[in-house]
Length: 128
Image (cartoon, rainbow, N blue to C red; front, side, top):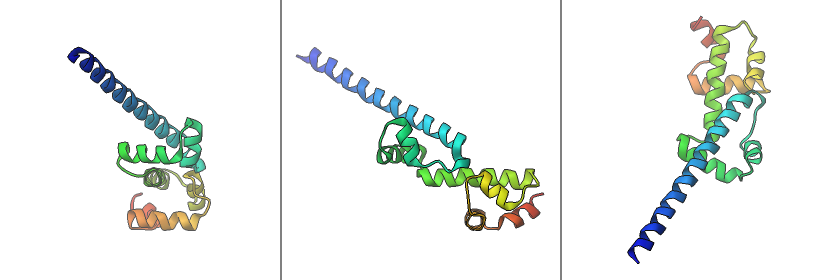
């Protein structure tokens, strides 16, 4: 009957909405974990394991909702934190690299330059 079809349609829509809310919550939790643990170099795999979902699923949902990949988001967050530390502290470059999750300060400098067009030391000089 038409009523039954309508009820089934409503249930289907409700379950789609529930799935969407679950995804939003998953992504919220993911972003919270990234912000809490970016300095330790937390990975997509580790977060997925904590949330009991596959890394592939998390990666796809993250990209769909945030608009960038997990690694791009992570890199951007780390670089922004590095800028704050370069301007707001007297820490040495290797200390800043470590604080934002890079074990290799040369690699950190390379990524920083690729991101902002100047080396961390030059950025610090021009923005103090």
